[in-house]
Image (cartoon, rainbow, N blue to C red):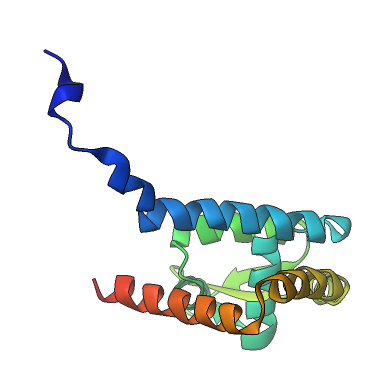
Length: 150
């Protein structure tokens, strides 16, 4: 029995939101990673350092919610960053919670990384133009809201 004869026309799957967002995310992530390489961090680490700098001490659960990251993935990222001396992970009020904060070294790396991040951000913004960037950001925010409600 040939199962391919029973399949629907899969060409419509090429417009899959998830697949195309992942593809775009990989391309953009690689671009930011390349730009931030001189200071020894990746784009994900930069974003987490920014979140910690702006938020101060925060529980892993709160940081996971804020960054829309699964706790396991976030914990793995934070373990690497703690070994690099960029963040401090300390016990919370009970044994099940952990409090995360940016270290002095993390703040110093963030300061060095900022001009590189700004260069990457500016390059994308200038290429896409302001109106398209605004539409993209609005669309991304809408997608996040839609999927959180589902």
